[in-house]
Length: 265
Ligand code: APR
Image 1 (cartoon, rainbow, N blue to C red):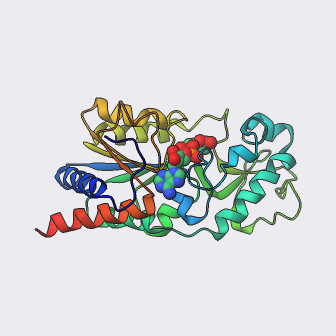
Image 2 (cartoon, protein in one colour):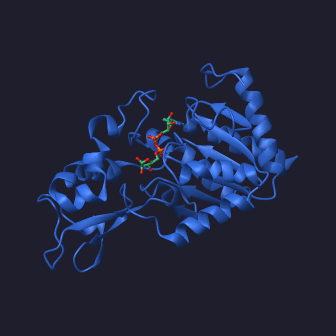
């Protein structure tokens, strides 16, 4: 597999998309694992990749100072400076053709579910129903004192940190570094990974566990691993069977169309 960047319309890419479509069409159970790269074309910057023309969030905010549960408990107002910026971006974001293509694959019975590291809710907004949000969701916040849960949209962010009626600080229901992902969620994600025979990995740097171990688990259970990314990742050489290099918002619609064409023939 060539590691040189392919133009989104290269003949080699066309061949790879057709090969991937055949694998998806022939599979008993295809699952997708998605990361921040899928939402870049919705205007949400990734965390780590500068290759997509936007500066990753962690290049502007040190995650050890702004994205750990210890930092949040120590100084919630400071962490909320980053969270408020993220909130404005998330509220403007809408699903892109990549999210919509995955929703079409699900509604046509060609995709059994999505495991996403994204907190933006764009899969559900695009129409996907079987979505495991491994790192939680931006939709709600919880009070660190009384544990009351509120809808994020109802919380003004003029004063930071936003406070619960009880006076406690509100925290978005997303997993910060140092927090444990609820085991039912982990178990469900591993079940998806082990039960699929085709895993489509979209827009993740595969840097953060436990998500980064899911492709290896799927491959260990005999699944074909297809990677869609604008650049190689630690998975590309040893775990991935088919690597489609290019923007997810371009490749996923072409993959979904190729799968649809195979279903009609
Ligand atoms: N299409 C496809 N892939 C893209 C695109 C695009 N348009 N733009 C960027 N990418 C790729 C990058 O090459 C990179 O490999 O998406 C990946 C984004 O990587 P990260 O920013 O590290 O995002 P992710 O892998 O989801 O991070 C995992 O780390 O900080 C934590 O909780 C955070 O959920 C996040 C986790």
